Length: 102
Image (cartoon, rainbow, N blue to C red; front, top):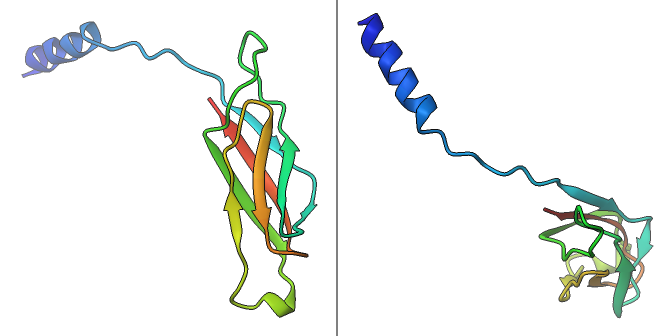
């Protein structure tokens, strides 16, 4: 039984798949205030060779919602690029953006 378990462990270790680790790059914006138009926020995400990277995830954290927008708050993400996060948000909504790239 022990020999079988040892053999199985050795088999698993011998057949391991190496996964190349990639660095996670992260950017947190300063407080932004929506004005109903698309906003471009420079994110500065770079790869290991200092080339700009396109985000894989953009998360929006609301810090305040105007009372007159109750039920009508909109946040629309545009097409992010290697230098900017593009977001359109309801006027006077306060938020921060968390941006990630691998």
